[in-house]
Length: 156
Image (cartoon, rainbow, N blue to C red; front, side, top):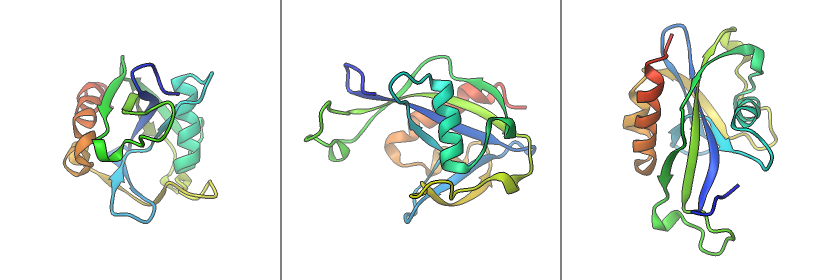
């Protein structure tokens, strides 16, 4: 769903463990790492989209996690000009995201990157809470920092 300003509605997932580390995943066939995220479908709430993406991207069911908190408003980032597909309608200039902080409450053996025909990720690891800000692609850096700042206050 792309809004009237050209932002695609999306959810982001920050999954934590008992050591207050975050789940960090490598995009299939690249050296690009990120948090799980995905688009919100028409007539789907952000929370429902989050649980769908959680299952599709990393194989977890709602009972495998504790929902701790979500950002209170949309966090936005613009795509650099070279990433904007000018031939698509409606034109997408970036993403607006609701970010969710989750805690894994089952053994990490339940994590599964192969639940779909074309997996999003091919590798994952636990990293320090703030490490992703230094490693994410430049145009997502500010939104990652905003999400982590808002959610860190609720980290358990």
